[in-house]
Image (cartoon, rainbow, N blue to C red):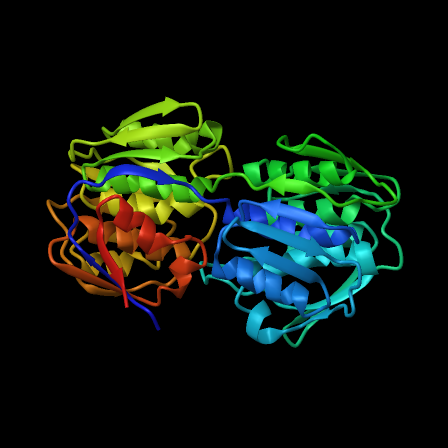
Length: 418
């Protein structure tokens, strides 16, 4: 297993460019099999999650050419040889494998996949995926760690989601675009990644209205065609570097962002005494190092994102005062707290809340990344901790951050991988 070694870093300064969004590119790769023509996906980040998604498709006969230098993925699914996607060594590593249900039902009428893997951050049921796809006419069974789905014909339906699940909304959209008749998704997720998927599908010839609102209406079409599409910037990576500037008292210009996507993070940073200057597709984040404790509650977009809860907790660990972080999305997303405590943080978990009393400084320690966002929180803490921090199991970090070491080195961080 590779490790990261981080020494206390001086104020981070310079410019950093944000990569394409992990959470947007994965469903779009899945959607690319809805046509037998070439789909060119641009600004694709070089992540292990993307590699795993690519390998899942290649295993069933999809042709994929990944130009990593130019960040372009060329997908052509003109000859899908199998509907069995139970490649366990890949499928169980990635949560997004479940997003193949919708497009495979639409394209081939059946599929079999492993129960999705990914980070262990709490109960992540797929009941809403099943509810939506069943409403469209699919028969879905789950046993022995596999999901099998069959649909002789998909027919539009009115679907209400009990929770605005991003994945369920995406899966239903991909299944509905070529279903017969009209599909209405109520209480749909409104995250930017939903809009990006809808824009990709619209370019392919889909008929979708309302993406970005809580009601999405889809009229099924008979055929979709190939497209060229650029992935939106990764708002979680942007938020991570914003926090990196704050936690080191630095001055960073973060390029390639969409301001509306990171407004919740900006609001909380400004509340914590960090200066943020926005200018078109870039922001400048400056901090004098005096961080004020603030409270946050994670919520679906446009609320504060659950993916930024752990990184923000690292910042609150050195803030003046006491902060309370309430996690409403995943019940087990405080696994990083024990590792931060090893580094000297004063934090206590009480149910779905974590109370953090800021300390003057953190101390380097040997810690373990238990998930993607928890791992990056430890990296951020290591930037301001006295001494050496070693992060084990960095495979989680590499699932969602492209060139993480190179990017941090370029802005003055004292970090290396070994």
